[in-house]
Length: 303
Image (cartoon, rainbow, N blue to C red; front, side, top):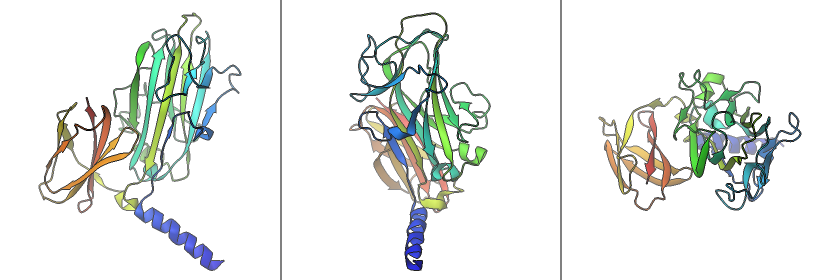
């Protein structure tokens, strides 16, 4: 028994030192990760959020076929309704060590502008506290999180699929989120007393990242400035960063699902990268100098 326990402890220690990752996409198609999704029928027994293939005048397809999460798959949304679903996530190393925590998704909305609208909220403490990531002005000023995409507008008319992406890692120090804590994301759609015969809100490919790159040694890394030119770009980008000491830096590029798609090392402060073969969309990069305990995170758009 003692030998078995020793082996288990060694495995856990090795994982912590070498780095762990946790990233997944809920696309509502294959049943994976749906246990994390809770459609609240307690506060609203007629909750209109449904998972399936949309069949409406406007919402007639998902972002990744066939399914999505929609405010009623077949009918207009009703009046005087507040419908909510939550997604539960068990915190990994990204929060505790202030590394990488990202929420990405795709949405369309068809509602009466301003009067009927959606909310995206974050809870660091299993639902005791909720922060509206779109309208909050308190924690954003403390640099607790950063919108990497254009800040979404969950009201009015967005006829095409739009991407939203928010970087959440700094929430860790602010709320002392530890490995294994329960955090939640809440999506709420609210309608007034006027029937407008609109489709509502549809979401798909909700992607979550919570990862500790390089193990506990990345904790305490200092941030430094970097820049991408041009941005947006079509063929070639240049990533500029401070490197007066001419030390080797690792540059990693991730797509908007969190997949590492490009990696290079350089001891120069200017790296030129050909992105002509990248798909159109939003990308993230991370630059790390382990000798100087420095890192920089940024984004660019391929068009």
